Length: 65
Image (cartoon, rainbow, N blue to C red; front, side, top):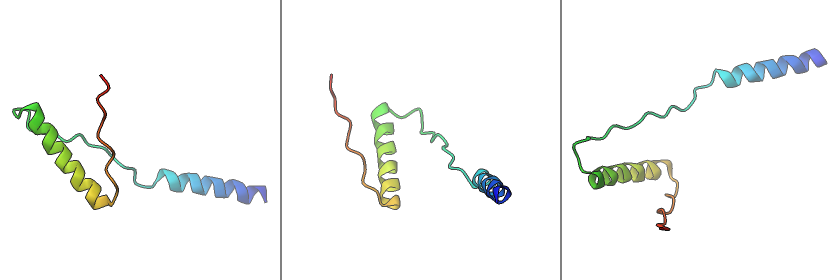
């Protein structure tokens, strides 16, 4: 019984290790653009991603200074 349990744990850990993992790649925007324009493009891209995933976007950051 313990041998079956150990084999199950080994099989599960091997299965988890061989699954595809999410990979985050930095998105390069044109460095010649001004900062506000790059921020606007990045926000528009994120809104498209949120719409595609069907999730609600996070609230905008609050300026507490």
